[in-house]
Image (tube, rainbow, N blue to C red; front, side, top):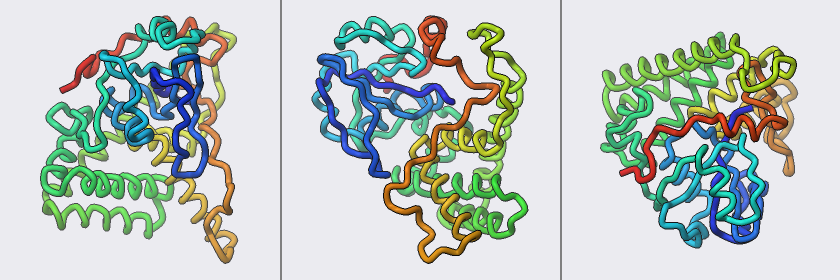
Length: 300
């Protein structure tokens, strides 16, 4: 289970809009504060990306948050006990990161000269040509097709659709750009797999020895987590639902392959050897959480 970001908002009793899946957002009301659970990895995105994700989820409702320091995001491994905005900020600020509110059309710094991954520089070039949303759509299409291929490497159709997504890039930016994109993406994914292999054999030092999780990893869960880290939890879950619906359709050939209305979202990925500390040690682990070193209080 990944460690996700939570936003601390000075908004009493916030009731956000439902998710694209029709489910309610997870919020906690604490006096004059609302804790908004992002379900995006805390370290998987820069602070201003979390701010943009929050804006896209809340829209104009976010304008009611009033703090000149911006918005505080903290890892959900922390479990604050405070019942007011000020008290919660005091509890978790050392483990969190401040970032200003942003508008819906904001472009995070990772695509404006401060790349988080090598692929970000290429995405930035694409944005300069076709615009932010169109570039993100092309990026998502390539990523999703690549993850489909990872799940079915021997399926010719999966390889063909991945190549078609790269061809769409080539039509816009040229073949050399598409080749660089593919090489950069493969390098990024291999680096993630190498990091996971390394972490898989490392014990969780924040837990007592007898509590360390030694359950074997699920290949599907690992892939879903990798997808979540790259494209965000909501997008990864949507792809997961679509993939399962397609697989069910192939196996059972129903009249309508879509999941029926009211189908619950898949449960969170099961705990893995590289999973973070369990809830019975969250307060101690929160105290050990390293101070973020990325964009800082006021990203440009």
